[in-house]
Image (cartoon, helix red, strand yellow):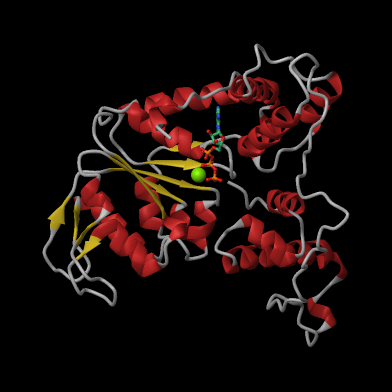
Length: 337
Ligand SMILES: Nc1ncnc2c1ncn2[C@@H]1O[C@H](COP(=O)(O)OP(=O)(O)OP(=O)(O)O)[C@@H](O)[C@H]1O
Ligand SMILES: [Mg+2]
């Protein structure tokens, strides 16, 4: 879709602050990080940053860093010379070269390898890079926007993300609020998505939502944020009978079914954080109980996050928790951005 044409909807004060911060950040030429849970609109904000910036007439190049294995990602970003690795038949221009003069949006930046991070750091510091299989130094003038849904300072503390690159990228950090933290926007967004589908269905107007549905939409926690809301509304309006009556049926969980496969809860997974059974009782005093449990939980969460490359959904599955439970735990231990 043409990014320039996407409308950004929202009137809540936390959202308006983000829009303001985005406009301010667009005008400087430095790197920006966009942080937020899945479906909160990181991509929309990234494109807005580009199209409001002085580089708006230049290229806006987008790379999903999670979509490619490490070596391919490096060749995607920096290009390669013919024969530089198995399968590299011809020469290839990388995305940094392609974005020269414009903006490069590195989505899911936390999944990049330390080696790719080092090269990204170099290009942010000196504007120089080399194609894979070449030692010729090239230069590119690119503004980087990075996006992620994980807490980068924690990733850096765990050695998964370079501190120096984080410092470089964190000149401006835009953290998007989850939908449940901006409930004022739920119905505004719902109406917007509903009207679009009503129009697609050839309805004269959108009849609105029944009050029960409104209550349900307002009360739900929206773990998948705006994307999830959009899907729920689109489904509801597509399935609604006609344009005369307010929409009074929604399906919040499309997977709900009596035949749904039982959760494949992870097998008892070994955790290397455990209380040492040989520990002398004197080292484990009763007053340490809560503290020990808390530390245990925190270590377990951090290790599980790391083992799952900070993908919260996978981490939840790995620990046999649902997404909400995991988020709750992460919040409790201050592991959220
Ligand atoms: N404020 C908004 N107004 C209108 N639509 C929005 C808004 N924010 C997000 N959307 C829509 O919600 C969907 C998800 O947004 P987007 O892809 O930008 O999220 P994301 O944060 O990049 O998610 P993920 O982490 O899963 O990649 C898109 O269809 C987008 O157009
Ligand atoms: Mg995205």
